[in-house]
Image (cartoon, rainbow, N blue to C red; front, side, top):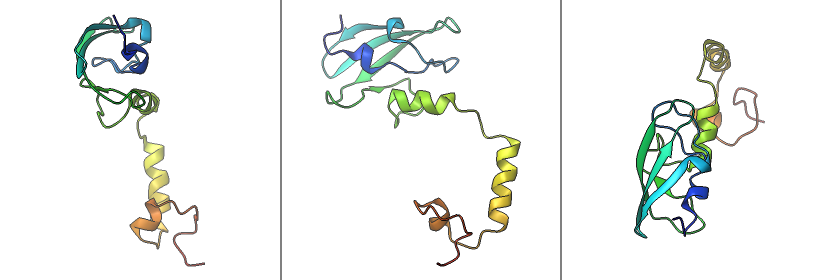
Length: 122
């Protein structure tokens, strides 16, 4: 029972226990009421089962799964973020070195400016 293709659209949803991505074949749509659906996520990594609520979304948008750690992210982006290692000591020291010589403002540092010259004017 999955006439709207929710299973495929939820591919990459994370396990609420261990964070592993749940493959499509381990997602079961238990009930679909149009505006919302109940799904079961079965994690093969840790063996946990989670029941989730999926809120309606347009056909071209990713559905919103209530078990998401970052509900503002679609399942694919959340899985990509979860697969990255946490910030480590080397990252901290690298940022410290960058900021130690930084003379620009925060907007320049975080903006789309590709210059890496400490914010100095051209």
